[in-house]
Image (cartoon, rainbow, N blue to C red; front, side, top):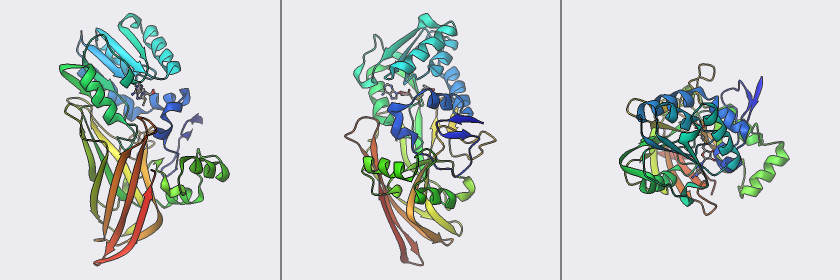
Length: 345
Ligand SMILES: C[S@@+](CC[C@H](N)C(=O)[O-])C[C@H]1O[C@@H](n2cnc3c(N)ncnc32)[C@H](O)[C@@H]1O
């Protein structure tokens, strides 16, 4: 059994992990290994990079990490690939990777935060994989809007091109029990987890979201689109408040909401992380899903309505942080039967 940043693999559905997106600046080799072993992610990006990058193109790989997307772009015949990465250690790995693959002279590493760096030319394609499991939980919208404005040549392409985020009410009693017990897999013991919540200013374990594979058969209603990011056009603000109403399609216990994204990477390649097949590799090992728990689970009857007020705000703590608020009520037979209110802000 190998150990990953998200615990021993194979892991199981409904196992609860702390949100990796919230610790982005601390990612080490272990997390990058998890990314490189995530077949769903790797197959989609490999196909898309080979489709989008034409021989002779100038390419920016924003957040190049260990350089895997840059390597694929170079294999596709890119004239030059600029690899922007703020983490100097991981950028060294990228340089080693492309050099070992024989493409070292066409790779230009640029160490720094993308907002702070300049490139010597505009590029034909900006490739990036900087989405969180709710799409916008790593600040990708503002980062890619800045990249499109300052680095992309007129008529150039963004990869991904479009990203939609979704929420759906779910029944996930085993995940809920782990949150209630304050025992996510990587949260340490109960005391360490309580200290972590205090450091975040959270009132309790239900004022945080988690990384969890949430099975499709736990969906209690049809998923609803939260946000559409068309990355080749002027950006919609990543600060938003969205009212959503779901109608329960079956009886079940509401444990919270599952968030995920579907991305159009290139002309023919899409990446949908809603899947739950851990053994079949249709679930994403690195993203999993975003679990927004509610403290008091609610028994839903078919036809009940779940009314959700969902909000995202940018954080003063830097470009990768944000606050989410999920608040709402359950309406059954015209009566409000339950209310919930949680926030990470
Ligand atoms: C999810 S990893 C992907 C790494 C690599 N592209 C891959 O596909 O395996 C995202 C990487 O982008 C870097 N990153 C995210 N936003 C960035 C920014 N605005 N400027 C520079 N680096 C950034 C992070 O440090 C991290 O290494």
